[in-house]
Image 1 (cartoon, rainbow, N blue to C red):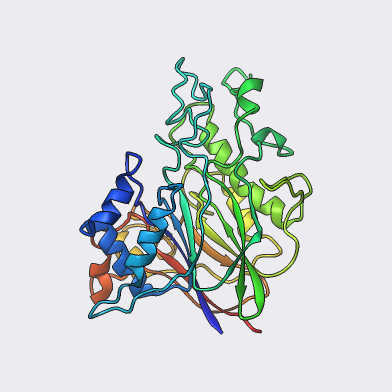
Image 2 (cartoon, rainbow, N blue to C red):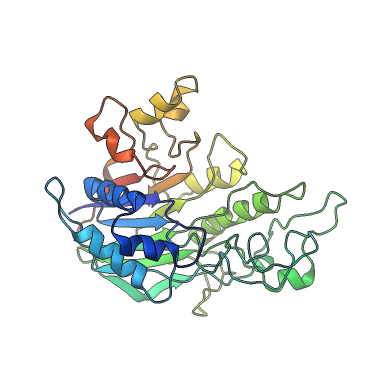
Length: 353
């Protein structure tokens, strides 16, 4: 069975709580409708959507499922009966002044993850196949200070940026890290999902750079079966065994940008990870005609960077992959209108019974 996995930073998050839900209910929001059309065109079987605001009622997910399932004269609806959606750290009050501006606001840079309300920039995994929720794991609450060799930021003086009270509440994950178990063709496959903070928008202490680095390092440790991590369900230890697909906007490129390149390079080269090349597009090359052609083909965002990933484990058989970025000569190019500044990435693999 060929299964298509995808990752897409939808940029659907809105500035206020409830605004995305209102846009979905209206049925007229241009970005929402364009996003639905794009997803129906690519037709993934399993997809991680980044930047979908979390709402505890579940109504956002229900509306998205309904919109995706509606066929049109040109596209077949997408039926996702299964989903995984859990709370995230973005916008969660901390009671601390993390950016050290003298005002603990409980939002923005002072939240547990950058956000102006709880659940902003959330994550949603949609699947055609059953999800084993009991076997799945989340790492929303694991503290940054409890990572061995954590890259905690320092002031220019060399003193610690965060004090003990900060570190007593600050998770390593700016949103959450998920290990989701999905039953596909008689097999259990894991989806490793995350959306690390951008490594910028900070100061000389580079606290976001450090956090992005360790959010990525966590996956390398997890795949190496480290014993230090404890999930939100109280279970200790890293990845067990089996096939997996790593999904998400990691806000890091192995060869460009402001992130710690060693962290992302180490993860992509991890012994459990497939050595297949990166997906590419002609649209990325067209978008950056003066850039290094090799790099621009791999870009997954209009701001000229490879940051979004769908990477299989070593033993999965890959039969296709791409960045969905049609160039201007392609009839599908118009599908990008009114959509995210990121591009969808997909991977086709064979799952044998």
